[in-house]
Image (cartoon, rainbow, N blue to C red; front, side):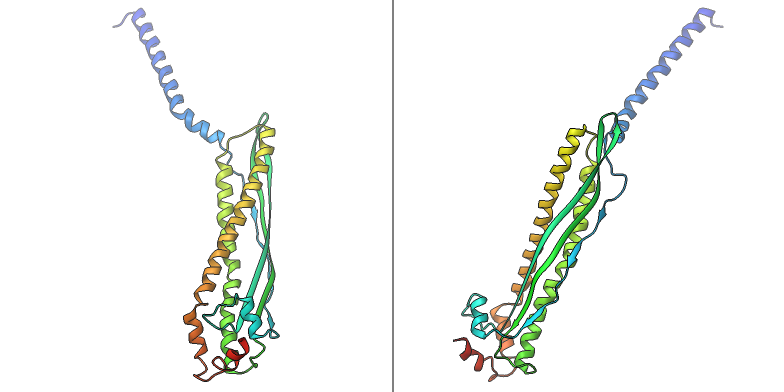
Length: 245
């Protein structure tokens, strides 16, 4: 049987061992705890909506073949008998709110992401030499209709880009750490500026992809196919050729 002194010595060693285990557990869990307390995950998703102001295409039948070819750049490779013009303008609104998470420390919550796109021009020109109801008119009208579909498809692409942008905002803000009030104000201004530029970059990418789609249906081969759609002696080979000179 251990003596009284030996029992006290064993109790003391047990207390030391218990204290060491507690310290070790704290060292293991402290980094995770610090990360959990240090990040600024938003408490809710921001309100995100796109204002897309449509404009129905307007048909203009008062322009000559010569005018259309000049407007299109006067390419000698094919005859331009129809033309579609489309133009958008964009603006970007974004709002953050600082959220206090400790004494003098703030996180940023994205509250609203609201881009606005206005269609300011959507014109479809068909050469004045073409009479409504003729084969040639119908062929040109259908071709320009394909351009209109490409333009109208931009809205869906912009909505997808907006969803991606909102996800980027939430990830970036969530990776931040609490900051002083002055830093929070500067961070809000910086983020609004950065994401405004980011949205315009995404919009320009969508415009570029749309322009590539337009080019794929505006080729010499496609125009040759259209010129033969109404027969070998149609207005494409006769009247319109003379009018373009």
